[in-house]
Length: 352
Picture (tube, rainbow, N blue to C red):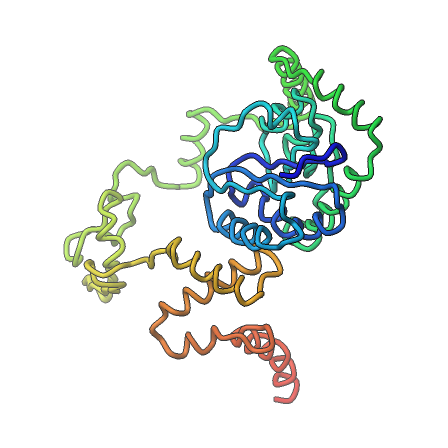
């Protein structure tokens, strides 16, 4: 990176997975570096899922942009980060979709770096610039909120950042304080819901209830399985401990005119694959690279959804299923047919 006294360094350190939201960083990195000449970005961490692969590919494309040279560093893998990096950075980036508690922000805070990230879960416990996520399914809304947080951090005067850095170093998260807050929460819950707690019935009450209603007592596995499953004359006994039998054959006994008959519904061959395997990581990576090279990547959620859908269609053998899975004017054909049925159904009912 280019050394500059006016530079403001943003660092993302952690696993490259969907939960951490590093794909949002990859989506707004170009905007940040274009709009703020003093902004610099460092991203370090191992890839853990397709969202991480997406972020790596986008960051590689940005590294090839000449105007970003000396302002962007990326290492998509495990790296021992020295404390000098935490001391030298200005902001810790944490746009997590969810974070139970979070330790990275505390580590950076104790070295004087405020956080720029989402107001979710255990985040926002140290000084920083945070945004709220009102619609977690909208990538564009989250990207816009992250941009606003970055802009606020870049426009903050040095005096404000110095105060935030000092307060961040003094952040304390003692076990005693956490325990006391937890006790307060438990006490509040008990006080509020104690009166509403239902009374548990004793065993004698339950027995008398069964006797009065005539409900049978279940003692054996045969009775739990039902009166017609696993009886003499069935084709194959079904047991909770025999999943292959449950998956390959369902035997149903029916009593007609005083004698038992057996109706068998064969779901599939025991040697055949009952469930299709998920699309492989390599297939997804190939699809991500192809889409990004075509420039069709508004965000990771949309791109990965398209890649996985296309990979599933490629494995589909039924020509009608493949046809219904094709997209027309940005909408799948099966969705067009369902929408048409919703529109024409009432009309047909009214006419007929």
